[in-house]
Amino acid sequence: MLCASTVFAAEEFGSLPPPPTAPPAQQQALYYLTLAVNGYSDNLVVPVSVNGDRYAADASELARRHIKLPTSATGQIEINTLPDVTVFYDSQVQQLNAGGGSGTPRLSARSSTGLLFNYNLFYTSPPQQGDTMNALMEQRLFSDYGTLSNSGLWVIKSSYTDDGSRYRRYDTYWRYSGSGRVVSYQLGDLISNSLTWGQSARMAGLRMGRNFNLRPDIVTYPMLQYACSAAVPSTLDLFINGFKTSSMALNSGPFTLTNTPYLNGVGEATIITTDAQGRQIATSMPFYVSNTLLRQGLSDFDLSVGLLRQTYGLGQDRYASDPAFRGFYRYSVTQNLTLARHGETVRGLSLLGAGADMAVGRWGTLSTAYSHSERDGRGQQYVFGYPYYGNTVGFNVQHQRRTLRYQDLSTYATPGNMSKESLQATLSSMLFGPANGTVGMSYFAITTFNDPRTELVNLSYTRQLWGNSTLYLAANKTLGDRGHSAQIQVIIPFGSSDTFNTSMQRNNQGENLTTLGVTRTLPLDGGFGWNLAYSAGNDPYHQGTLVGEVRITRYRGDLWQRGEPNALGRNERLGNLSGW
Image (cartoon, rainbow, N blue to C red; front, side):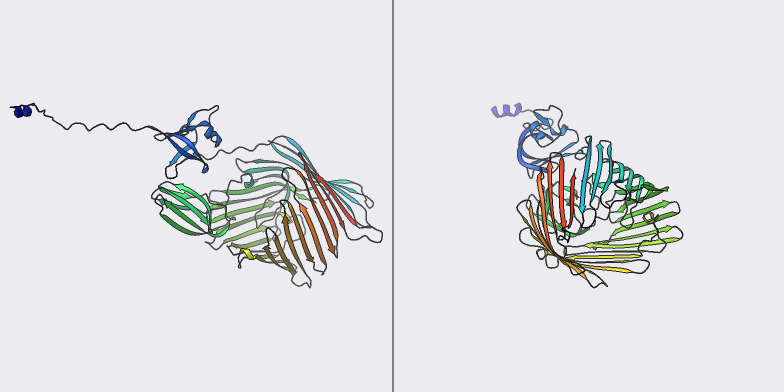
C-alpha cells in the first residue's frame, strides 16, 4: 500500500524544468596596470577600475601623463568618455594603452612682439694702406603678424677714401610663415627658390612657397612600410641593419608598420613577431629610401613675382622695369615617382622645364630634367643625375649640358652666358669597415662655350682615433696645372666643451702653413667661450675670439693679425665686434 501510494503521489510535467541560474558575474574589478600614452610608458603601475569595456583611473595619474582632462577634474575619471581618446587593454603585457583618436593636438606657433638690433663691426689695418671700418647692421621687428627686417652695410673709410662714409642697403622684406598650411609668404626683397636643376634670382616683389622646415614632424619622403596580419596577439620587434629600433604590441588581425626611423639609402629591415607562447616569426625585407622623392600625397611649390634686382650690394638700388615671374611645382605620382614642372618669364624671355625623380628598386634614384628657353633664339638644357648610398659604398653623378642660346632669369640682365657643360662625380667608401675610416674621391669639370675646361680632383680620408678624436686627410689637384694642395688635420676634444686641433697645409705654390688652435664652446645656459689660433709658415697669422652671452644679448669679438712686421713696423690687423 505504501509503495502504491508513493507512485500515485508523483507529479507529471509537460516540459523540462528551467536550468539553474548562474551566480551573477563580478561587473567591476580593480587591475594594476602600466599606462601607455601615445605609445610611451613610464613603466609605473597604476590602479585601474575595469567595468566591462570601461576603464577609469585617478585624475592625478592621467594628468601626470599629459592626458587632457576637463577643468578641475578630480577623483576617478572614465578614460573612455574623454574626447578624442581611444583605449585598448593589452592583457598579454598587462598594459592600458591610451591614444589620441585624431592624433596628438598640435600647438599653433606664437611669437611675442619685439625689436632686434644685430650688428657686426669689422676693422682692418693693412700695411701701407688706409684703415677701414665696416658696420654690418640688421633691424628686425617681429610679432604674430610676421617679421619685418632690414639689413645693410655702413662703410667708413679713412686715409684713402674718396666719398666718405656711405650706406649700402642689402635686403628689406616682410615675411610671414603659417605652420598650419606649411606655407611662407615674403614681400619685398627676395631670392626665388629653385630646383636642383634651376638657378635662383634676386627680385623685389612677392614670394609664396612651401616651407617644410616649419613642421619637423612631417616626413616629406617615402619611408619603409610593411603590411601583414597577426593570427593572435603578438609583440613586434623591428631591426634596421641589425640594430633594434622599436618594439610594439599587436592585436590579432591585419596591421601596417609605418612608424620607422628616418632613413636614407640602402638597408635591410628584419621584423620579428612573438606570440604569447613564445613562438617567433622573422621576416627580412631589403629596402632603399631616397629623400629626393616626395611622399605620396605631398606636394611642393614656390612662386615668385616682381622686378629683377640689379647691382646688388653696390650701393645702388636698381630694379628692372619689366615684371618677372618664376615658379615650380612638384608632386608625387607614386611612392617611387615624383614629377616637377618649372617656368620663368619676363619680357623677351620665356622658359619651361619638366623633371622627374624615379626610384630604381634598391639601386638608387634616377633624376632627369629638360628645359627649353626662347630669347633671340632657342636654347635647351639637359640634366641627368644618379645617386646611390649603400652601407659601405655611396656615389653621386650629376651631369648638366646647355646649348649656346639657353638663358634664364639669373642671366637675363648680364652679357655673359652660362657654362656649356658641368660634371661632378663623388664616391665614398667604407670597404674596410667603419672602424678603419672613410675614403672619399671627387671629380669636378666645368666647360665654357669658349672651350676652356677646368677639372679638379679631390681625395680625402677620415678616421676616428682614440675617444672622439678625428684624423682628416685631403689632397686637391687641378688637372693641367703643375701644383697641388694638401692638408692633414687632427681634432682632439678634451673635457666637456674644449677642443684642440692642429693642421698642416700646402697650397698650389708649394707654401706650407702649420696651425695650432684651442676652442671652448659657449655654454648653452650662457657664459663665455673663446678660441685661440696660431699659425707659422709662409703666411703666418694669430687669431683670437671671445664670445659672451649675458641675459638676452650675445657679444662676439675677433682679433686677427697677419704676417710679420714690415720695414715700417706694421703688419695687417683685423678686428671684428658683433652683437645680437
